[in-house]
Length: 143
Image (cartoon, rainbow, N blue to C red; front, side, top):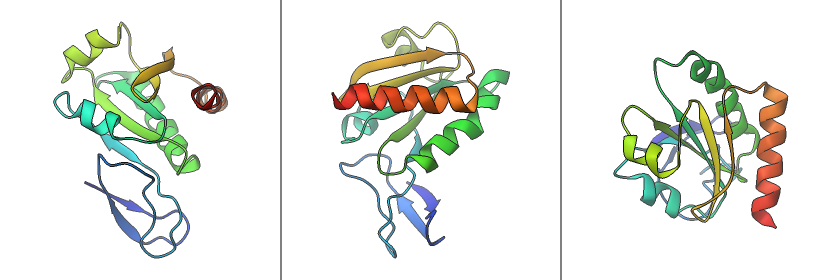
């Protein structure tokens, strides 16, 4: 369970890692950013229960480009609240997931829709390129 401040009213809300639907503020009912960490043993539940497209960020704590991407990934979660779920996976702690998705470099970002990989990007991206890629991947997922 994560605690997230509502971008509209500032009220702190608890947001579960796994559930269907879109998390909303308990006070103003605005969509909340959905950014969670997932361990290898809970990944399928966290991603599989999502009714939204899921941006999976595969990263590592020692990775400099991953650190550069962190605030940009958070920004995507905030700006696309109600349209996307962001799941962060530490590659060092989840080698089977890295194998499963063919991760060969980090950061790797995967856009999943109903558990299916719609698109992927490897390496750090500038803010505008990340947002454009996510918007296009969400559009492909909806098609």
